Amino acid sequence: MHLIVKHCGAAGLLVFSSLLTGLISLGWVSLVQAQDHTKSVATNTKLSVHESVEEGAALAKSKNCLGCHQIDAKRVGPGFVAVAKRYSSVDAPLDYLSGSLQRGGAGRWGAVPMPAQPHVSDADARQIAAWILSLPKQ
Figure 1 (cartoon, rainbow, N blue to C red):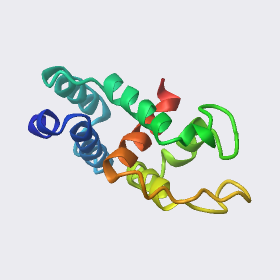
Figure 2 (cartoon, rainbow, N blue to C red):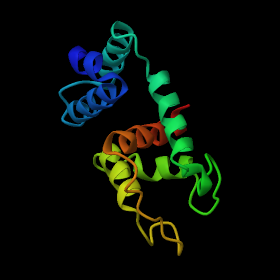
Figure 3 (cartoon, helix red, strand yellow):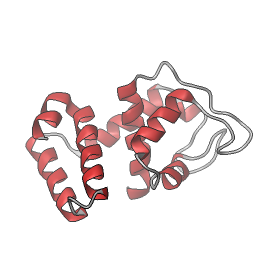
């Protein structure tokens, strides 16, 4: 797992985190073990979760997400903290949010639809989704 993160940077850290989440849900790894291992991987690869979060925030700004969303309040669309709280408990929340970001959607948060964002790459969508999911924990 260290190699995934070392060679893929922040995106590798997201893959690593997704793998750990799956292992936790299967009961193969405890949450404490996962947190300890995540800290170890981040330290050994000179990446930190904080750096990954900052990259997600920068991407959200550069992709104009903040034109319709605020961090903790509704604008045109829901605040990102509300999004994180609603979707953090769904199966594979990172996949769900990154897919929703690219495909758009309607009817989940009211009458105004979210347009698809096809200009956002898969990797960028996952980074932004990881950042959104981290917000209630900050």
